[in-house]
Length: 264
Image (cartoon, rainbow, N blue to C red; front, side):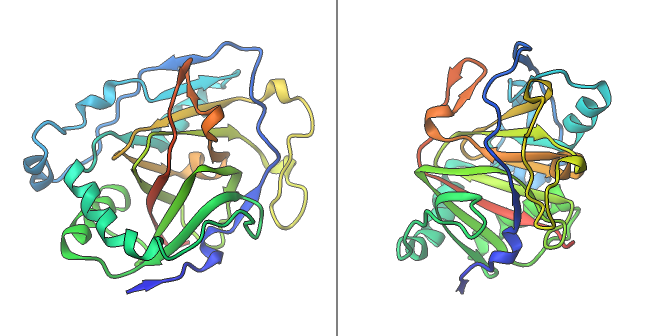
């Protein structure tokens, strides 16, 4: 059964556009994350033991304090090839019949997203439920909110810089990326930049002093964002024309994310 998404779970603090350049050259680092993977999942994907996460998926820009960088790397993980091509097809076959009946929206209630359609789903086909159970086990130690958020971003769609409200979601978010590669940008922010009770923030001055990270989210990967990465950084999905990782253009087409969260 499909249920139209409750907007409160995506309540955000929207920001002005993030500065696109910095005086400090971009530094790309090699990230290695070894999340816990169940034995039955390894049997299904014998080549997917996550050793391929030694590829370059994370780029730092700006002057990062050591403590911020250490905590960020610990709290922002990406697992390539978390699902197989057949599992991606299986997920799409379940959600596409509903999504195609919806129109893409270009006026989000808090101006955080443009060119999207969304829903929430609690009950899944058994094969797809097994995929989500892996996400819950690996990212949430077995306990997550029962409704799964499905966000369909059009090719021309964009998710603007925002920080999710602590009132509606917990300290961890995990998303499977379908159909397209994309680039997520996370920019360090702080409480002093809050401008009102709606948690809207702006970069009003000293833009050259900001620091951020670009995270490559490959198709069929899983990202897990928690703690400091979740609340100390804005996050956004770059628009197609701005979708560059390092110096390499990333072709962003239509993107669907299957998102799990834990309770506040």
